[in-house]
Length: 151
Image (cartoon, rainbow, N blue to C red; front, top):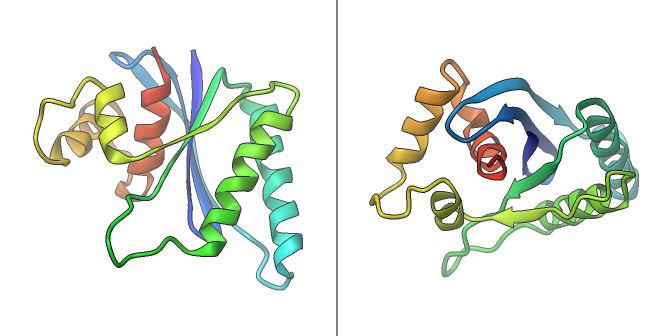
C-alpha cells in the first residue's frame, strides 16, 4: 500500500510518500513546495491544486491525509492555511483517483498508529526515528499522517 501525508502552512506544503505497512514502512519521497510569491492568492490556490494532482499522478497512492492543527483556546488557525487545506481536500477528491482526504490531529494520529495509551508525543517522534530513520524533523508530521494511512 502507498500513502501520502501532507502538512500545510499558508504559503507552502510538505508531503511525504510512504509505502508498505505501519509495521514495515519505507520512505518513497519527501519534499517541501512553496507557492509562487509573486502571484495573488487565487493563483497560489490554483498552483496548489495542480501540484497535488501532479503528486497523485506520480505516486498513485491508495490513501492521503493531512496534519490538521490542534485547536487551542486563544489561538486561531490562519485563513491562508485553511484555504490550502480546503484545496488539498478538493484536489484529492477531484483527481481521477477520487480519494477522500481527512485531516488528523495528534490524538487521532496516536490512535491510528496504536499509540493512544502512551502519554505525551515523544512516542510519535520515536516511531519516526525507528521506522523512517534519518528523516529530517520538519517532515515528521506529514510522515506520521502517511504512516497512519497504511494498514
